[in-house]
Image (cartoon, rainbow, N blue to C red; front, side, top):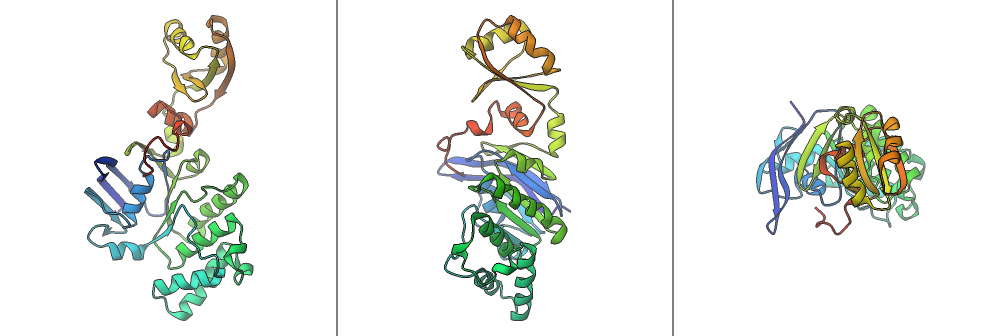
Length: 314
């Protein structure tokens, strides 16, 4: 039986449907990614599954426990790492973890053993007695993940775990996350809007405007796009779009960088564009199928096209 089961989940805020009939399952031991832009419904869904938020209709079950009927049992089954840092900067790494042990009523001996064990897992044993305010962003994130693992949860929820980190630190944190499956055996449920992180998940659900529009392994999603994607910028994109539709029978999609169109054998198609378009071609790029292309194909927009004020953040 799946360790997470969600069916027809609906959540409204002042008449706005932030989550609109979402359904999906997560298998035990999976690294499951929830991919979508800001405001798509990722954080709302994860907050419902962590019993931090009620919902209007549907069902949500975690580790066999109903999120509405048995929230305490759900909470004892999960660990959670929020988007924002929630550590106490004036406490040491050890003190932050010890306080978490108190919250879960762990026996003193068990807590001490587990703290030492989990600090070793996140490579922070030597910084055990250091104040958290002296830690880098990546170290703080690793410590937060350690805190979420202290009580050996069945499911670890990570809400945008690398948000705000520099690319190198993001890479280090993600390598650590991938290692959790081997070292701790957890099911990992993470939200992200970074394509490279989603690529590394066992399965991903793509959510947009509160609805799941695809749920599959990354390679299967990419395989559904038959052909290569060409990104083109011209002196008159609207005119170029009309010309491409008329001369090639294709329907380019507007994106932030100009136009995107999917064709077979893109390297052979590009010279034809130069030959037959009257608009000046300013730039052209060829990409093999990626999750970014999958998202554009499903929604008509790239994730980065969504500005921070496009929708309320949910």
